[in-house]
Image (cartoon, rainbow, N blue to C red; front, side):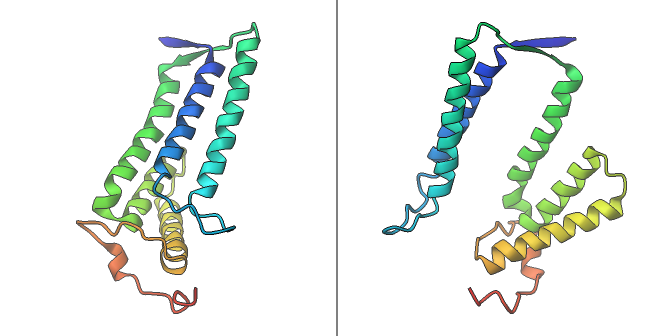
Length: 167
């Protein structure tokens, strides 16, 4: 059983414009910056503007063309799309409860296993190393706050880096 999706370029263009609008809405509370220096809202909005512009070009090009693209999507293809999306939704939903470090380790291990990494020691080691590196670079060095978790807070057990106060 398969589903045929028609006018995929137009659908993709509309979804990309929706993504760009979502980024603008999400960044409305970000600081704009002072004087000539850009604030935190500058780069997300710049990228969203470029995405919207290119999506508009894709839509116009698709509307001007008489060749409407269509694709057949099988249940297997839909599953290969749905599982990572479900994992990502679970990752975001569990972050306030479990905290950044533990949630990221679990997400990376499960995602790597789903992607074909067969060794738990390899995926676990890489997930722990990457999670800790992200935590220390963004949380300690750049002072970007991460959710600590309401139930379990692994971040409270981690030592501070001596170089963290330099910035």
